[in-house]
Length: 258
Ligand code: F6R
Image (cartoon, rainbow, N blue to C red; front, side, top):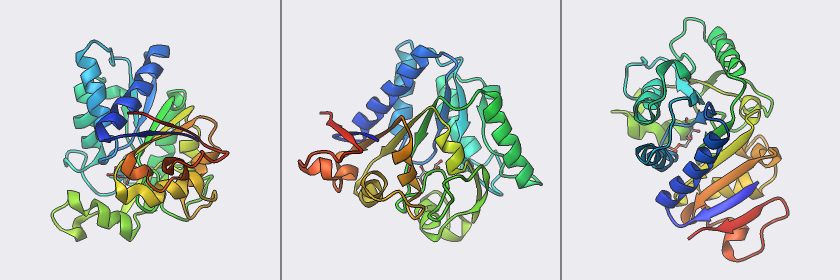
């Protein structure tokens, strides 16, 4: 995995956005896999600034990673609403070019099959943006998720529910279930950009990048992806061997941006 360490969240957003814009330059109809949550927000803001400076996102296609079960699409906390509000509308992406799993489907299994079919009919994901949970999850693939897993109905771990309680009035309001792309689905993206910010992510980042490849740390499977880049701010990178002045490990290349 390539590792880029930057000083802060804004630099992280600029570097990640530059990779997306590079991808868009090669393919204006790029399929961008989009994460929700706090980690990619500075990336989305940098992309929105780039639109203001003339970058055209009108052909971009967006595919979400996951969705809560049982939260109406119109609820601002749903990932449908997040993708519309934070990404599609400000970038000028056409609504019919946005794909999000249907967390309110009567038949969740069929909804997952339909979602995988939608990704296939787009020709697959070109660049997948990912955040990482404190427990090493990517998407909502909690520890123990199979590396070959596909989009499915899954349960949120207590750690993830506690972390996401900040978006809900009461901790018990956080959904218990979700639909999530599987690790096998995520790994099919041509390029993966994992963004991590803050000291609370440092242990997960170190385990993902330098630890053993194990289902106990779902993000560790990214070590085996041929084109995966971690962009971390200094706080999130603090437990990486490469960030303490030691040479990068054999499986990482490391660089530090100002
Ligand atoms: C979001 C997602 C999750 C988050 C992760 C980190 O669609 O799939 O894996 O990326 O929980 O969340 P934040 O960025 O809020 O710390």
